[in-house]
Image 1 (cartoon, rainbow, N blue to C red):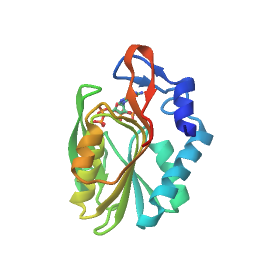
Image 2: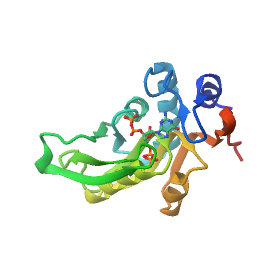
Image 3: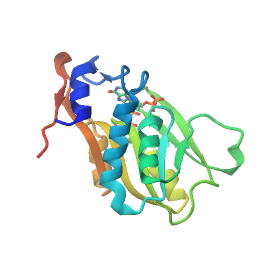
Image 4: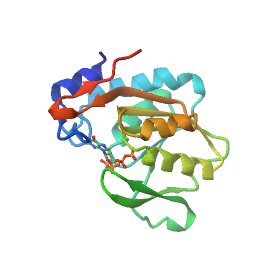
Length: 191
Ligand code: G4P
């Protein structure tokens, strides 16, 4: 069992069968040592793909993505959910969040993704896959390449992983949750 998996079992709380609470170390209070470890894991896995830029989605993806970009020695680009004053020169796509039951507009300045760049997408959770797919659409609008998707916590019993696999995206998840039934967190065994 890896560092993140152990931490999930120690400090994560299965709020219900769909939601894993990790706000003591990942997405509210943040453990920098754990983020450093996560960044290094993604670095080691994706280093061979000549990544030009790491892309994440505000806000909880930023901590692990920043360490990943640091180790890869490339810039981090944060896709915005709020409309910004830069609105005229942006790529934009609508994303539906099944977990939160809302739609939001993902935007990115056209200045920061260039044609042909190799992009690594990093996010904290993979649930229904819609955020990652939205990020992929933005990368494609810029005629850049999605070289991989790095996920801290994948809820493998939700449809996101299958959607990304069906698109033949290279997905690497550090912790895969098999179920959260009856308050018990079950981690998927590695094959
Ligand atoms: P999807 O992108 O895979 O389709 O997932 P979905 O829209 O269903 O949910 C995405 C949002 O919900 C993300 O937050 C994600 O961090 C959060 N989320 C999903 N599952 C869980 C869970 O089990 N536990 C926790 N704590 N959060 C979960 P977001 O809207 O992007 O907000 P932010 O926190 O990044 O600002």
